[in-house]
Length: 487
Image 1 (cartoon, rainbow, N blue to C red):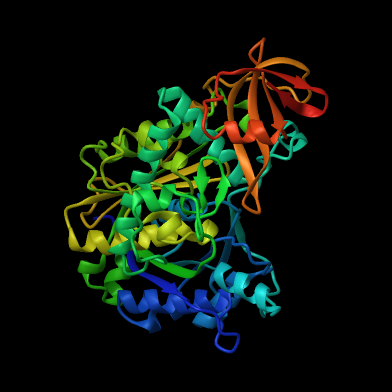
Image 2: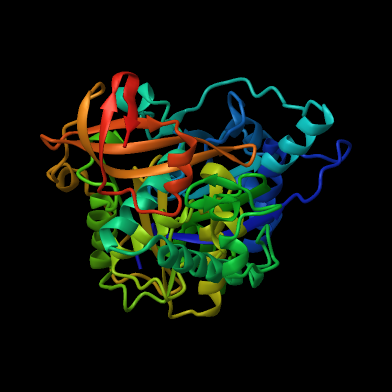
């Protein structure tokens, strides 16, 4: 075997439950704890002093240089300090880059870590507490990934900027594309999410461990308020979590020198990446993902696998539409297990760091099923940025393989769009936003008579109520001045 073959040797997950101002640990301290716990999982907590690169996944926090703080806390101040761009894809992207660096001999022992404290932030806010935040002065040696705007002029003009507005529009577009009724589609997606909840109940590191039934998930009520049609709270990513995780990855040569037992080794076989069109306005449709189809299937091809021969899979699950679209593009059945954690709703959604938890859980499961292969998918933005990884306790037949499939995705059809449009349109998809338990505003993606996409809003409360029980995709309407839609 190539002595530079990358291998994951240690993983950890930390849940900081409850909120106590006196015992609260902020994200950087959770990162240090997670890294030490991952080292202990590998062989010994003391191994962290030999780390030559500390890599932190960008979070919601406002630290200037968390990797430097973590390196100091681990006793490896001279280690390279790496950060990432923002996005739920970045953990897998970071691991892909790290595996390449190790294979090329640039690094031999690397710590990846990240943490969020959304639960504590919410509770402290209610109590009027100000959470501490350490000074982490300095700059990264390297930043992996790049920041690009994912909201264009057309969406911004109608106030459509957040995932809770856009992902439900993907959901409704998918429902219309499949020709399903609202009732049937709601039952199907709630059953899908109930299966995710069942997985979380068996995951010792899940944030919500009591399983929810499909009717509980589908029915709005106390603790499950409507957020944006067709999603109540239990179909949204649960960001109110205090969670940290770490992964230690090194070369086979280093693993042997550290004395890490081979029963701990999990090999990254393949990594691929690609982005869909950054502006949602420019996408050909709202129910598919060329980037997932191209890059995800390429990952399986490189590994010599298919959807039928992959044993474990974790599809990024910020919303049901993300799972359904990815499963369709990759060839997985919605009836089979599609998560190892329980997903971002039940396993927990620590923003950009979720995939570190899904990889950590995958490692635990692959160590038990030593001949199994696992697929991790990662998604950032509005079903925008995608990264894939395939893992196994079995050594790969070839050195770690990585491909960026962007050039192929860039050849896919796109759609023209306009900011301002007055006249007849056909509703492509829509959602209804809620505030205080009541309908607030509707957002619609519309297609003009010449095939361009534009966006419009609905304010009529009677129409907003009707939108939840009747199919509005495909309806004719008129966009008036200011982007208001009239039926």
